[in-house]
Image (cartoon, rainbow, N blue to C red):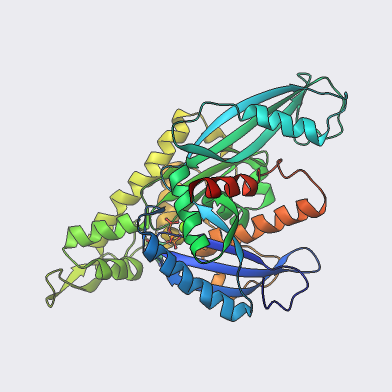
Length: 412
Ligand SMILES: Nc1ncnc2c1ncn2[C@@H]1O[C@H](COP(=O)(O)OP(=O)(O)OP(=O)(O)O)[C@@H](O)[C@H]1O
Ligand SMILES: [Mg+2]
């Protein structure tokens, strides 16, 4: 990091969303937490449903946010951790088994059992992004979280594997590298958001986190401090606005505005008779529409989204793990009535999650749409402390930086 006045390399997070790009630069504090020293935001162009569809526009959008963050932080950004989403992301649960070579589990045994759990047939064009250990079993005894140093002869690991399309990953990396930003890590967006908004107790008891962005809604289910299920749905905030534009024959810009100003999805407790002025898509003609008309269009879309997830959880018998309920985050969670509607459909407590910080978080980050960006910072902080402790970086999230390097050099 050139031009930095800090003793330690700052941590940089790059959230390349469908509607906005957010760059956060942070400094590790003496007590091991982080202080955000630079923020850059720009409107995102060039992505659809979380996937790069126009490289040049994406590069341009990232550049604007990066320049703003560099100016505020007073340093040049040379590397960053980025988030990834999109319907190309898939997940599977897998197991691995290895003999414990020296009767006592070492880092090498853990590395080997995780490697053995990864030996699964992947669909064409998919690459492993994360290998998230759920638990280990030694000699068929009780499940353990950290087997290091324990005695036995046979080590088993149960893992959750997340894969993504190689081409989508490469396009994101290419955009960053074109701006001379080295990608240090790629993290599934809902994992980052979960780090920012969930409490340790929620993760332990069992909780779902749903990041409703502009292009995708990203869900992750935690239980016993491990990820047990993830899913990415191509239905999110932009679809709500599109529905309004089509249903009311108004411009997309106006649809976005009325959604944020007067939109709601849960009729109870909202003023139904209020009116809002909109401009017709043909231009010029202004008309007033009832707020209840907005709800009539937005509510079915929100119900569809929550029902899709609820049905999937019911089919997979995963609802029992929602003891601490569901946390909604992402900009889409700001639509009025989402919390109430989700509570009704899931039948569990639902809250809206914003980035949480031990220190005073900058006011401009006090919004669910910055959960992913802030979570990426926390992820990088965790990885850094693991490196300092000389810890094998597999147990929580397997680092992919080395592999990324080879993907990139193979293809560009
Ligand atoms: N006050 C609000 N009321 C309703 N919707 C809102 C509000 N503020 C933002 N949104 C919606 O949130 C969405 C953007 O959320 P967010 O910034 O989390 O998405 P993103 O990270 O850019 O996209 P993605 O994660 O899908 O790639 C947009 O669809 C926007 O309309
Ligand atoms: Mg997002």
